[in-house]
Each structure stands twice: as C-alpha cells, then as structure tokens.
Image (tube, rainbow, N blue to C red; front, side, top):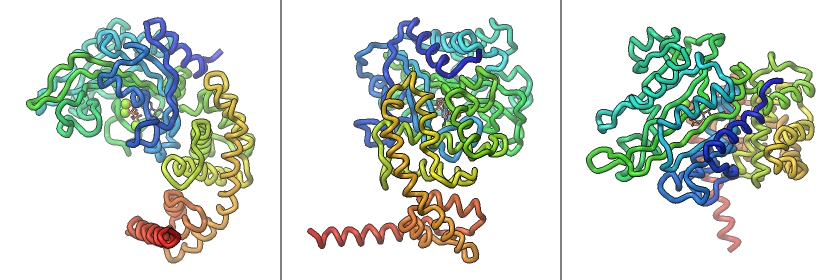
Length: 467
Ligand code: ATP
Ligand code: MG
Ligand code: MG
Ligand code: MG
C-alpha cells in the first residue's frame, strides 16, 4: 500500500535510533520558561540550551518529532506546503558528528528509507560572508557533489542569482546553489548583529522538485531552489553550528553541533509524489470529512478547505496542550484560528456548528502516535464547541455590520467596535474587508490602537476606583 505519514515518522525515529540517537518526547506547543516566544515553532527551540552548551541528560545524539505552531505562517496557509501546525522531524549531534556524517545520513534516509528520487533532490549551501571572514561552505557542497555523483545524477554548483545560475535553472545541473543570508543560522539577525560570543553557522537546505508544477513568473523570471512558486518544496535543513563570534571576526567552536529539522508532511507528500501536503494521511481525512459535510469538492474549494483543516487541527493540539480561547497571548491565537476556521467554513456553506463532526476525525488520525489527543477528545471538543457557539451567534451580525460600512469604508474606530461588540478579531475584520472590497482607511491600525488604549485607560480607572 502507500506510505503513510505515520510510517515515515516511525521510519525516521527508527533510522535515527539505529544510529545511536535517543528518541526524546515532543515538547508541548507552549514553551515553559520562555517568555520570549508564544509557541514552539521548531524542533531546535526546546533544545537550544543544549545546543548552546548545556549537557543533555539523554546524551549527545538525539532525535524526535516535534509538534510546531507558526502563527507567522498563517497567511501562507492555503498554498501547497504551509500549515500553522506541523510536525518537524529532528535529529541533533551535540559535539558527536558533523557534516561528513549528517549529510550522507539524511540523504540515505530520504533516498533509501523514504524512497525519494535522487534526481529530484536539490540543495542549497552557504555562500560565505567575506566581510566577517566566514568562508563559503565548500565542505557541505563537496559532500553533496559526491552523493549526487555516486547516485548517477548530474550535478553542478552555482552562486544563486548569478547569470550562470539563471541559465542552469530548469536544467538538471543546477543541483547545488549557494545563497547568502538565507543559509546562515544564528539567533536572530545576521552575522553583523550577533553579540560577541554567540554561536552561528552555515545551513544546508534540501528541496524536492515537482516538475509538473509550473513556475509562476509572479515570483520572478527564474525558478530556483528558494522560489516561492511551489515547484521546489523545501523538505528540511541541516544547521552546522561551527563558529563563534569574536571581537575580530569568527573563530571555530570547540564543540560543533548539528541541528536537522524536516517537515514530516512535506516528506510524506514527496513520498506519494504529491506537491500538495493536504493529500497526506494526516490531513486528507479532514479534507474528506469537509467534503462530505459541505457537499463541495476540494478541487473547487481548495483554499477554504486547507484553512479549515489546518486551523481546526491546530486548535485541537492547542487545547490538548492546555490552551483555552481568550483575549491574550496563546489564547488569542487559538481564538483567531477557531474564528478563522468558522469564517472559511461559512464560505463552504457550513453555517451551522460542525466542529463536533470533525474533531473525532482529528483524534483518530493522531491516536496511534499522540494518544493524548484521543484521551482528551471530549474535553477538547467541549472547549472548541463552546467557542464555536459563541462566535457563530455573532458572526452573522458582525458580517452584516461590516457590510453596512460598504458605502463609507471603515476606519479603526469601526474595526474596534466590531472587535469589542461583535467579537471580530481585528485581523479577521480587515481580512474580511479586503476580501469584500470594503475600503479600509489608511490609518486604520493607528486609529484602532488609539481606541484600544482609550479602553485600557478606562478600565484602569475603573479598577483604581474599586480599589
Ligand atoms: P519555508 O521556506 O518553506 O517556509 P522554512 O525554511 O521557513 O520553510 P525551517 O525553519 O527551515 O522552515 O523548518 C524546517 C522544516 O520544517 C522546513 O524545511 C519544512 O520542511 C518544515 N516547515 C517549515 N515551516 C512549515 C510550515 N509552515 N508548514 C509545514 N512544514 C513546515
Ligand atoms: Mg518559512
Ligand atoms: Mg526556507
Ligand atoms: Mg529552512
């Protein structure tokens, strides 16, 4: 039968275990002890203290599948490869091995265990930073060249963006491309902004080519590894932490680390030769359920169904990890996911409560690997259904109200009213206004913030009076 995402996750963890990695459990979506970020957005994030030098209790070779949430990708949801919630397969070497072992290791996993076609794999490497004395990553490119050559596929290296690269793209020789900033890893910013003492290093990304996806010239004249058109899909990347910033430039770190992160959904999609991650076994049952409930087809309603499937799944995992819809921080994001799912479902003709029809499908998908989802399914449904009922009552009124501004356009004042009285998150009402062609005032954001501040001042006054 066809390879399922569950099988790929399992195969990855077994493959890494055979190579001496200890399999560690996922961290929750809400990081503890980290006030700087709302969600766990990568496999690396919970391991950062160890990558920076602390000893990990499980040793120097680790692997996992980490549940991630990237709200920053919310606008991308609807394309063929981004979801807000996803699983990242990860492996780490804390001073154990480096490029020489990592690159062939992930290559073997992808080509032999998953069975991907070596001829459709493309990679990127770091082009170097002469201003800071950091060399081009010829070492990684050399290892890749060896692997491609041994597999009998043609290969060449190019500096991305040069005329030679542009000419080679579209031919199978443009296998390895050197990029600058995109392939430099450090905490925040660039080599220039890094504080003295910080570690950093080059990164090498792995892409899979879907030749039948046509390049969209809207994304530039030439298609290449990092093109956003969706012809190349980034499967994963390895970060090689090998330098430390000094007063005068960069020096080699005494202990070099590897961080690899790969998207389970994208690898599973590549395994079934689909450029659409929603076709995989972790997402397709949700889409099928939406097709049944709405009587519409995925082909006609691709974007709406992708958004609903992704957002509901994300909200389910947030509930499992203890978040409740609210007006701040993680709870606000959860609320936004739920309300957006309801709004997009409305476009599918799903105008009545339907979460109860979809949440069990999500629980079933994850029950084998993340039993906590099925174990808490009644609770999760209660939390989600409550929010659904509350919002649905106001959705019609809110849409009607927004429509009343059609002739005049809306300012931040009205947007505030919509959010305050009708429970329309401002992101949703502005998105709605744009979708319906209702004009937004140029300063809506400032106007909205002004209203919000005024309200905060009012409520502070009230609290003070009570005290
Ligand atoms: P992209 O360029 O496609 O947005 P990225 O470079 O931002 O990906 P990384 O931070 O390198 O992603 O994360 C490691 C891997 O996790 C990616 O190679 C990809 O396979 C996967 N991934 C990242 N973001 C998403 C997402 N929003 N949905 C699904 N998978 C993702
Ligand atoms: Mg991204
Ligand atoms: Mg990328
Ligand atoms: Mg990447």
